[in-house]
Length: 379
Ligand code: ADP
Figure 1 (cartoon, rainbow, N blue to C red):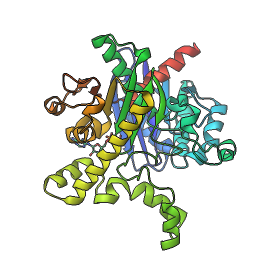
Figure 2: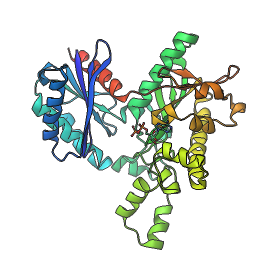
Figure 3: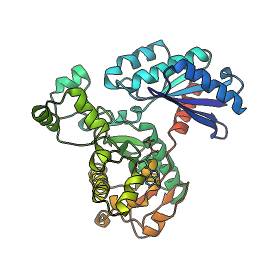
Figure 4: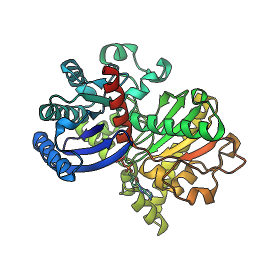
């Protein structure tokens, strides 16, 4: 059984072909600076054929599409039909950059492989279990009723995947029941988000209506006083578009120290660059605040999970984010923290109550697994 996972962006197409029996990647690739998604899908088909793992698209058991915003309409991964496409289209105002690109990818793939079932897997679905008191903002309730202004949350496939990995690990090693686990998952990549997970379900997450809220990110500001844009408009005359660009693309780590790649920032801090050091401190301080908040939300935790490019690879960021949390039962062992492994790795000291786990995420595999689940249900 072969499943193709597509992540269609506005100017790029990422693809990964899975053998679902072995749960293994057969081949993967990225086509960048594309302008025509139909051409890109044709180019991808050629690459897949030349790889020797597939002779025709019709061989696929399914195609799984990453779709960024499912609003309140999609609680679970969904088999794509005309009505699903219509609904994703209606959600474009909530994700004006992402959903249109996702839709173009879906339509191009449908044309290429009309017989193959296609499944939409949404970044938002995992967070649809968040309770009302955590997703309604302190705004007039009519904004939720009329315009669907609420917290949705993103990175859902990643949080769900690492939570499942953590549950498997904690159950097999310590006999902990997955159905009782309390987890705090920290996805730290270019985008960063924290999620509180209880009994396998998301009960709060740091991103909101859009992926701008929450932790400080590579180029996004995360939590700020919402009055800052009004102040800027009054003082500088900036337009809405300019502020959107400022908060999404010129802020976060990049805004603080001029760089958004954490490897570069760490290297610069090591040579004594004060602004890079400040950027690291701000980044870690925000993570720590969310750990504290979610410990309160969950009434304790069994494990904290670090994932994403930074979470998986930077011992410095993990250490600083968990510094001086011993009173809360969190204590990282620096030796374990510096040893690198591709599997689930425990990095807390022996005597600590809360496990600190480094878990490589695999959003594409999670999309493939969810796609298979939908296809098998259909049979
Ligand atoms: P995306 O969110 O685009 O999927 P990733 O999850 O790959 O991105 O994360 C990218 C980030 O991970 C970059 O900031 C990169 O610098 C950082 N990163 C990767 N390896 C390391 C490392 N060894 N130390 C620090 N940061 C790292």
